[in-house]
Image 1 (tube, one colour):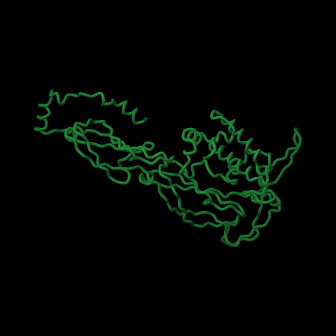
Image 2 (image 1 turned 120 degrees about the vertical axis):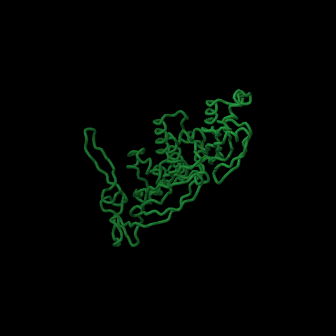
Image 3 (image 1 turned 180 degrees about the horizontal axis):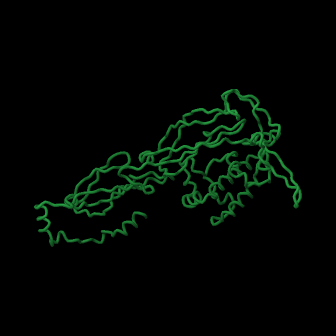
Length: 373
C-alpha cells in the first residue's frame, strides 16, 4: 500500500501552499543524492518526496487526492502522481533547491553524468486527439504519426571546452554584500556539456533530423475534454547524451447526436406522443455501444426521469460507471382534426383528465436536486 503523501512530507492536510513547498524542500535537501552518494534508500525517499509534492502542490490534483486518495490516479496514465524519475524531478522542481548543490547538479545518478555533467531534456511535442463518445466510454488505443527530431546516425560529440563538460558556468561578482557566486547553463553547449564534433549533411546544427514515427497512445476510459496525457520519451531528442522530451496529448471529445454527457452520467431526451403516454409503450433509444429498449408504463408523466444504471461513462478513477438518464417528454399536438378536437372537448372536465399529482411525483426542483446528487 502506498504511503500517505502528507505523511511523506511530514505535514497536515490543512497545510498551506507555502508550507507544502517548505516541507518538500526540507525533505529533498535531506535526501538529496549529492548528500547521500550511493544510498539507494535516500534516493527512494528523494523520489517519494518529489512525487508527494508533485500532487500536493497542484490544487486540482490535491483536491482529487484528498477526496479519493491514491485511487484518484490509478488507471489514468499521464494524470500525475506516480513513478517520477530523477530527470522529471530536476526538470520540474530544480529551482526549489536554489544554489544548495551548485545550481542543482549532482553526480552518479540518472539525469547527470560523472563530474556533475548535466543531461539536457529535449523539447516536448503537443498533439490533439479527437474521441467520439464510445471511445471515451470504453477507452481506446490510438496510433498517430508524429514528426519528431531524433539524433542523426553518424553524429559524434566532444566535451565542451567552455564549461569543461559540466553544462554550467559559474560567475563570481562583487557586490556591496560581498562576493556572489551564481551558476547558469553554458551558452556554448546549451547545458548538455557537449558540442558537435562531426555531423552528416542531413543533420541540423544540434545533430538532429526530423523523423516520422507512429506512436501508440493508450487512452483510459472516462477522459474529459481538455485533459492532457503524457507519453514519456516521444518528444524531440536532446543533443548529445540528453534525454528525449515527452509527447503531450490534448483530448478533444466530439459531441454525440443524441446523448449529452454530465460527469460520468449521460442524458437522453425521449419524446413520446400523448397517446403513448396514456396507453404505455416500449421505445428503442441510443446508448453507448448500441441501442437499448425501455418500457414506459401507461400513464407516464412528462418530465419523468428513468435511470439506467451503469449505462453511462466509466469513471477515470476506477469507481464503476455512471448512469444513463432518460428524460421523458410528452409531445402535445398543436393541430387537431375535427374528430380529435371533439374527443378532447368531450373529455374536458372528465376526472380522468384532471391533474392529480401524487406525493411520489417530484417537482422540477426536486428532480434537478436528485440529478446533481
